[in-house]
Amino acid sequence: MILLDIFKRKKKLTPLFKKCWQRIGDEIIYPAVVEDDPPQKIVYYGLLSYATIYEVAVAVGMEPSTGHYLARMQVGKFKLGADVTRIVEATFSGLERADDIAYADLFHNRVGRMVEMICDDGGDITPLLQELANAYKPVTLTTTTPKDN
Image (cartoon, rainbow, N blue to C red; front, top):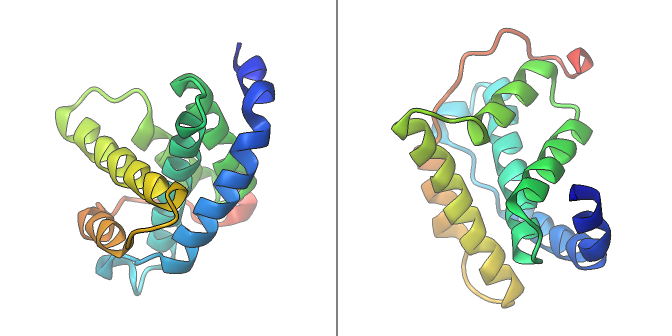
């Protein structure tokens, strides 16, 4: 089912993801708490990339399960390291605690709004990026090297 969903909408997905990721990547605002902590920057980058591909997939009409599949694949392509990849994926899946769900929803909602704004060729996404940067929760990493992947 997921593969069928991907093949049916890939022509819409790819250009929209490129457009959105270029804009978000160019304007990214990193949380103040990660300025002197490169591994935390990598985690934040992973969270934004996961949420972006997921929200773009949903925007082009894909099922949420397809969006999560594509987001996991995209994060894997970035070779962020095994620990970072696990943390990013865990942030968006299998959540039980209300505060974890709210944190994931914040990323989905703000990035989803950015995708809408970029699709409409307008709007300042900076306040949304700043809100996400302010909300970032530093994580505990055990390994941080990309070769772990």
